Length: 146
Image (cartoon, rainbow, N blue to C red):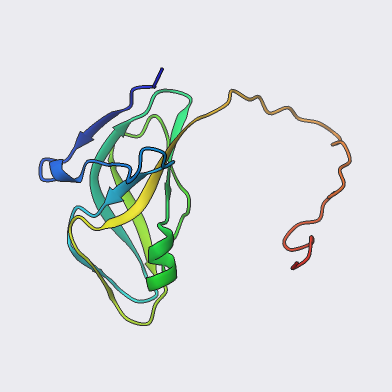
C-alpha cells in the first residue's frame, strides 16, 4: 500500500506539479517556478512552487539532473538537499553554474529530481571502540583509481 504524501502548489504553479517521466523512475521531476538567469560560478535559489507534507520518519532528497550536469555544468550546491518532515516552506533548488556563461532557466524547466524515502528507526550509541573491517580508516581515494 502506497504512503500518501500531501503536496500543495503555489497559486501560480498548479501546472508544475511534480511528475515522474516513467512510472518505474525513482524520482519526481521538479520544475522552475520562475524564469531566471544563473550567473557563472554562483549559487542561486530557484523556487519550484512545491510545498510538501512528509510523514514522520520520511525525508525527501533533492538531487541533480544528470543531463544538466553533463551538458551545461549545472549542479546542486548542497546535493542531495534534505527536506525534513517538519518543513512546510516552498521547496527550493540551490543551483550552481560551473560553466563559462550565464545559463537561462525558463519557467517550467526541469531543474532537479526529488526522491522520497522512509527513514529507518536507529539509535546512536556511544562506544569506546569499533569492530575492525577490511577497509579500516582508509577513505578519500584510499581504494585506488581503478
